[in-house]
Length: 324
Ligand code: ADP
Image (cartoon, rainbow, N blue to C red):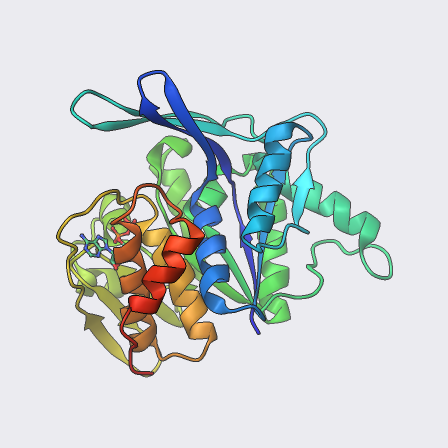
C-alpha cells in the first residue's frame, strides 16, 4: 500500500461542444495525477488531493467528482469566501483550441494557511505546525502547484516540505512550467531550485527545461540537474523517449509514437500518475516507464484529461503486459 499526497489546484472546466454550448467538468494537472495514480495503484493505495475549495455548489461538485474516483478528500479544505478557479476551452472554426482562465482569486491559493489552521485545531495531541497525519509515503507537487500558492504563503509551504522531507516522505516534483502564472523567470528559477533540492524524484519535461535553462537534450538535462543531487530523474520528451537516471541505471526508453493524436491534455500528468503507481507496485523503473508511456499514449487518443472510467478499464485489459 502506498499513501500519496498531491498538492495543487483543481478547477472548473468548461469545454466547448458547439458554439455557445459547453460541457462542465473538473480538471487540473494534479487532479489528473491523483486520478490516474488511484486508478492504477490498486485499492490498497491511497491518493489524497491537498487543495482548497469554497462552500458553493461547484466546490461540492468537485469533492463528489474526486470521491467517485476514490480520491481521498480529507485534505480538501474549505475557504470561507473564495471559490474554485475556472477555465474555458474554446474551439475556433478550424478546430484550434484556446484557453481562458479565471483563477487568480481561487481558494487553492490559500491552501497553506488553511492547512495550518486545520492541523492546529485537529492535530493529534494538540498543535502540529506542519505535519501530515498519517505521514504519507510520497508527496507530489508541480510547478503549477507552486505558482498558484499566494507568494506570501510560500514560506509556510517550504517549512511544510522540509518537515515532510525530514519525516522520511519521498518528495516528487514535476516542474510543469506555465509562464503566465509567474511574475518572472527569475522567480521561477529560484523556486524551482528549492524544489529540486528537496526532490527525491523529478519528472520534468524537456520542453520546460529548454525554456528555463536552455538545455536541449537528455544529456544536457541530466548534466544540468546533476547539481541538485536528485536520486531519480525521469525526463519526458513527448514521442522522443523517456530518459531515466537513477542510482543504479541510466537509459533512454524509446516511445512508440501515436499515429493519430486526438488531444495531448494530461499526457505528462497521466504519465506521472501511472509511473508512481507502477513503481509503488514494485515494477522496475524501465518497466514502469514502458507501462506509463502506454497509459499516456491511451490518454492522448481521447478527448480531455480523464478517460471515462469504463472505457479506461476496457483499454487497460487490452494493454500487453510488460516485463517486471
Ligand atoms: P508534457 O505533457 O509534460 O509536455 P510530454 O509531451 O513529454 O509531457 O508527454 C508525456 C508523455 O506522453 C511522454 O513521455 C510519452 O510517454 C507520451 N506522449 C506524448 N506525446 C506522444 C506521442 N505523440 N506519441 C506517443 N506518446 C506520447
